[in-house]
Image (cartoon, rainbow over all chains, first blue to last red):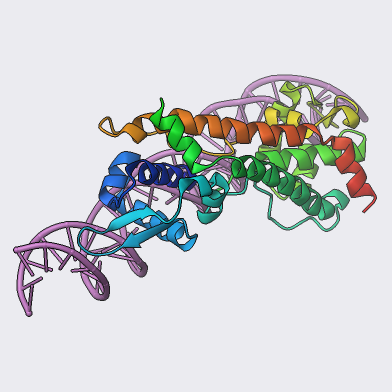
Length: 137
Length: 137
DNA sequence: TTAAGTGTAATAAACACAATTACAGTTTTC
DNA sequence: GAAAACTGTAATTGTGTTTATTACACTTAA
């Protein structure tokens, strides 16, 4: 199974942007086609990142905490629990092998670069932009 | 569990680059700290990508098929079976929901951009460069 | 001819994620 | 102030993905 938290989170926030008012987790879950509990866990993460506000109780739910022009995909990416772009081999090195002892730090540098490239890409896309794409077809 | 094929493959090829001669799968597996069968499966993929040559039988094993200056990390990335950088939600849309019906193509564009950014990064790094980093500390 | 390899199928074990159930706590509405 | 409709969260189960392991046919050098 693959970690889809980022996709789920972007979907949820897009619904909130398009709706412009409070939406409950059951409705969001139907749109994403997942379980309301999964949505609520993501809502907590998004709230902690300052992207949404939630409200408990009757007529409760979630809504954006700020203008979608000021929400980037990078902020969403950082809010949720994404996997590394290039997963490293974390097992211990074979002490007798020169390459084995040093490959880890070298690969870590490569992975950091890849991660930075993805982050740069995501920083350039706003939620507002996705909203427009959706609304205008 | 996380897909570490790319890390494994880079490690293997670095050992081959540093060694400069045929190395068997048991030795490679010890360096990576995995199982020889896992290594041999990767060797098949790397051979099919034209990066190494393998030899069966006694004193067999693998060696680089070309100068490490002409092997990029992108070639290695493409040779093995990597996961998408940004996994998409593949489940079917909720027909009644406008966002749900259109988010998939929008997210696919985002994911393609991220993938392209990673590929560009990897294209700029050669196996020779890693080898140098390892050898020079 | 034997020893030491690769190639590969089949299965088991480990692990990561999502789904589900259950329930305590919160807030609105009547 | 009671009921209804939510969120928050713990605990467990289900499912898919990846690596580990075993087994063995095939290949090649000595």
